[in-house]
Length: 172
Ligand SMILES: [Fe+2]
Image 1 (cartoon, helix red, strand yellow):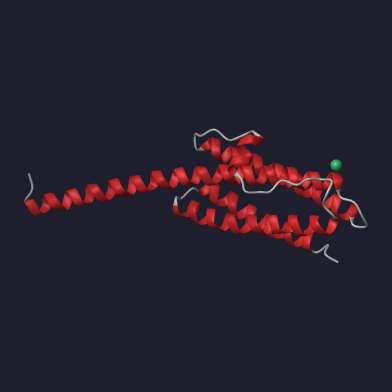
Image 2 (cartoon, rainbow, N blue to C red):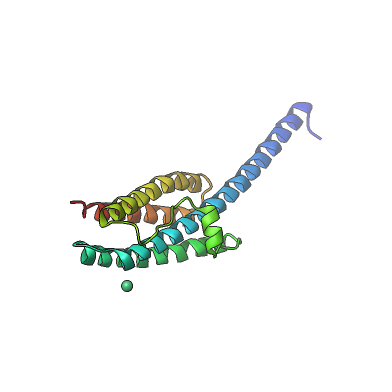
C-alpha cells in the first residue's frame, strides 16, 4: 500500500489514461462518420459527373465529355477505397442512394435543364466545396491517428483541387 500522496497520483494517472481511451473511441466514431459521408459525397458526385458526361451539349461537348469520363472513373476508384477503409474499421459501408442522399450534401443534377456554362460553374464549385470539407475531415483523421483515412483524404483533396481547376479552365 502506498502513501496517500502516491495513491492520489496513481488514481490521477488511471483517470488520465481512461480519458485518453475515451477520447480515442470518440475520435474513431467521428472518423467512421466522416468516411461514410465522404463515400456518399463521392458517389453522388460520380453520378452527377456521369450525368453531365452523357448530357452536355454545345461547342465544349467533346472536351468536357472526355474530361468528365476521366473524372467519374477516378471517382469510382476513390469510392471503392473509401468503402475499403470503412470495412477495415469493422463497420459496414453505406451502399444505397437512400443512404447517400441522407449522408451527403451534394445537390443532385437534373440533366435536361443545365447549360454548359451552368455545368462548368456547378461542378467546379462542387469540387472546390469537397476539397474544403475534406481538409476538415483530414484534421480529424490526423487527430485520431487513422492513417488510411489520412492518406485517402490527402489524395482526394489533390484530386478535387485539380478537377475544379480543369473544369474551370473551360470558362469562356
Ligand atoms: Fe460514355
